[in-house]
Length: 313
Image (tube, rainbow, N blue to C red; front, side, top):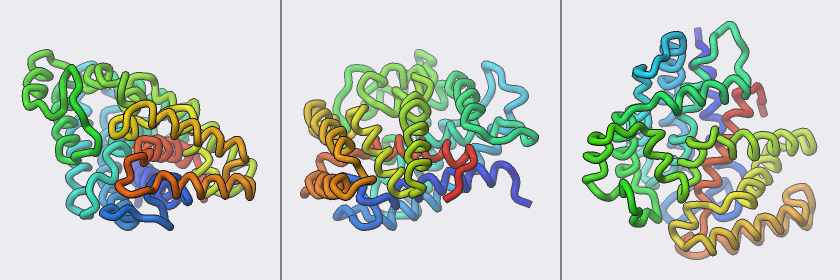
């Protein structure tokens, strides 16, 4: 019979599918718009490829829940690396899911740590996430670095410390015995995924999840709720993928536009929907330099917790 870990994997896979399907999600791939080299079906293939790895992460979380010590072997870095490898093997659209992997893998561990006799809840997941992120090792950091290099995400520039493109960074991580959380503390000031790890997954739980729940209560429509939640996160948090490609001023300008679109009603009103569609057209110009990819990952993270907490479309 399917176990709790299967339920968790299905929930997180569904979150990935609902996020990429939401339309017209401004600036990113969705069910009615593709990029030139990265298409909707590449994201579907990635979601299929990730399910076994999310299941194993949940299973690992369950097995270590009652004996978690400071020296516990979470092996989260290895799971992240293998998940990235699986995405590369199952589709040819490039980096579709690195950010989502970095967010959903610890969520899978945290959900797996909830005893089977207890219900899966957002509160329990967040409580366990605090344990997961604080029990990573330098081995996790090294494997995550290798995963990022393999995924080859767009817009990576030089950074002053532990540059991902500097082969000496891995040596330095081992020499200083830096955990994955230590590394994310260093990058948190310019990368929102790192910031989430360091700050109790605040965007996921304090912005994305409550807004998503309110939108669902108000509209009963998952597509409307996902697109508006995506815009809400973008309106508050300048997208770091845009910032890496185009600079922070461009990222802030896109956030301001998202705020204005929500002010017209977002997906809830005819005027707002026209504004969403126009924003999508503007951001989808050739080369996609202003695609809010990090925002999509954060939206998937909020969706994953919503579904773990019991939502079903």
